[in-house]
Length: 435
Image (cartoon, rainbow, N blue to C red; front, side, top):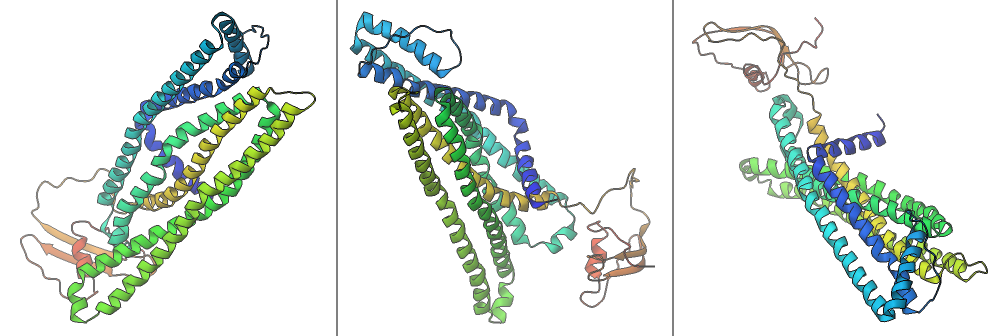
């Protein structure tokens, strides 16, 4: 399977952990939608506010209500003009100001509620991943851990799961809210000025592609950094377990040098990751400023042209809405960087979750209620790696009577421990050799 498809598959496997929390997720999405709506209405209040402030007298005709922003603003201005005639400009200005305050209050209340329902999802998913990883470790055969270092496994259960929490789960808020923001803002902008919105739709994807290239390299570096963390923990575990030997052979300096090389490699790797990650914010801000300048230039031409297609107050409202489009696009960029780092750790976690369980129970096993006879090995063979290191045990026949004590004697590496480990079924016998 291509590596890009594996990345997508791993991402959706993580997203499937949200299923038990789908009711909270839906609630969070609804409150995010309300947040965008209140934010949009508070921004469009700029148009009537400027009209009242600069006494732009126009005759507005009441139009049939629709979802068009221009129709909504026209009808609001129709009622506002009537309000100005009856109560004066100062009263109308006070009314609009109060309405803006209420809309911003509702926007922030719904934003908090959206995050309130998202917190248990984020923490619950991380808890479930830890639970599944630990449960899989308990079911894996002992043979799995002969090829894996304990420090690396600990790094996957701790650091990699933590990286998934920071990188992917903390990006759920952006994944839930920002696409809604962008879609609704773009629809609103398109209804106000299709020409200007077309420029936005052309320029923003170009900026996104430039940022995406950096994110791709970040994922690769993050994966290498997590491997280095595993090496560091493994080295520390080996040193703590072999302190007597290190002191006995005065190997302190050699151990320091070995640990220092791994630590230095991790240091350099984290520096590269941090610099690439920190490039996301200034790069996205600069590209956003470029896009904003282009939009302002062409928007000014529409306002000042012979056939003015856009009123000055509407153009200012368009710029205000567009300025609110940049933060969610920037947040999605940051989330993309974090997701790239998190997916690198997710691959290491799935290395454990997808590991095959070699020791499997047969169908309809016989139940032994008491142990009365003994244990018999008949033509038992075993190799840790098929065709690589050869057989530790080959064609072993052994009878151990009930109630007898048997001693296994032999040189180191002759298979004594392996033979003993087959009794509690830490390993299953295999027959890879040619008979």
